[in-house]
Length: 242
Image 1 (cartoon, rainbow, N blue to C red):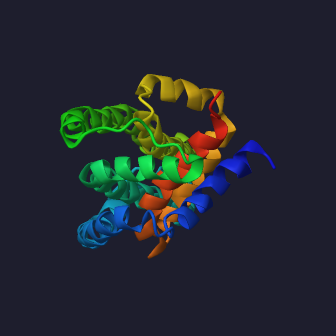
Image 2 (image 1 turned 45 degrees about the vertical axis):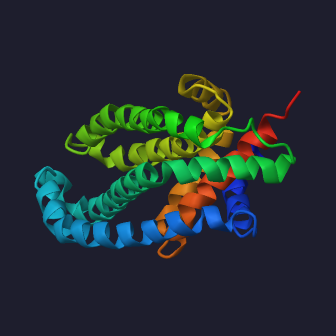
């Protein structure tokens, strides 16, 4: 099995983990919040989809007008990924304390060894750090996403922009969910990024699987807790204790 397919497999492992009776209570509340949030965002984004697509196609040169159907498909895919990112970002901000607890419980389930116990007061004091890491991820994503989005408006180059957009978002999805087990193990975000670069195929395989899972209706409601559990399983398996 290649590193890429092994990485994708961890996302599927996450689905089996969240069905464990020992983890269900850490999944139910974020799941309900995800459903409500997704429905609300869906109606907002659907309202602007057609108008934005028509506006974007005005940037297509006359000699490439025959590609309008293909770019329409690419645009819809890119827009869907942007919707997924918006959904995942807001959902993760709302549920990050629960996702952190879920990651810690997955570690206990897989290894039988709990992470160092923290009192409620310590967990409360850690909240600024937890939210700070989430905002650091947003600031990492924003400028890079903006640069790739500019490519959509450059003739000829905009043909490859959707592929770059897809790969970048797959990479970011992996970073988003690997942040939970690394934070639980007191590993900095910069160290997590370095580890990801050293395991590119594994990281992209996992991130791509998460991205696809988030694009599938109904499955996307369970995809976030599954991604947290899967990322934790990936971290535990690929970083065995000495």
